[in-house]
Length: 196
Length: 230
Image (cartoon, rainbow over all chains, first blue to last red; front, side):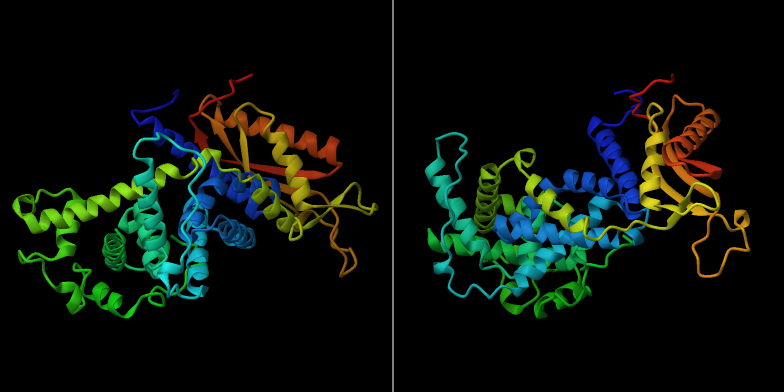
């Protein structure tokens, strides 16, 4: 890569993406809807995946991400330049999903949670049956987590964020995040063991 | 992070036991039931936490109770990996329908900015700032590797006819403040001069807008050079 100074290529790409986001966010804040559309295009796939993990439903995830982007458009004029658009929109989506989970009726009857359909795209046929059953168990067990546990656990385990990043995203202390992730893990291991 | 309007108050979503855990720090499992140790005397959370941090844990390696506790956690991690593997890849996620729906709403809530005069004093032609800014940014970006950011256009008070009737939009030439990023290959003064030149040209020929001044600020020098100097 030209102009690279001893940085890993990934960092260079991240830096370029961050810079491009910054420029687009400034323009979008000034009313340039084409710049905003570009931001939506760049971030929508990752945010959709995040929201699908958090909510367990692609349809609800689409609504949550759409609402988040619309809300971002309205707030962009006050967006500070030293802030990262990616971090900001990630946080908006996370909090929107948290509110959706809180508004749900508690899943009292875990046995009533439907087992998810097996996905169509398969990797290797070996161990697939066993793997499917375990993944289905996990999905079912996740429905028993509190909204706060679920959000922290998903960000940690599925999105691979640090406790500090999760704390920033959710607006609680890293210690509280650790507590939630611990409880979620303990609950999930117990629930899955009980079903086996 | 500065912008966090979507974030509720930090403590609102904290359950009863969790607040205490947060307050005492360190030990996330603070209720009596959670503190019940493994038969070897260690607490589950600390066994898991040390494993996650990658810290060496000689006791756990030798202890059957800790080993069992770690096996359940590892099994969970395996299932999580399997679950991740069944998800569609991010680049395969089709978000185009979503992008379309978002933009449908956005286009109902456009922010056009100021209304700016076009043409001469006695004319009655106007353009909104967002539309004029689009032309200005595009003109700057005709230069290789140059990317335009903030663009503010307004009628400058010192340039206007102060005798204009009150309550009417001011007419008069505008001032443009434009921020650009340019690649290292450019000489900075030269790129600022060229941007100014192209912007003035576009304002006159494409918009018919009278411009007194174009302030160009180079906000960043980019390294990823796609274009070369002409």
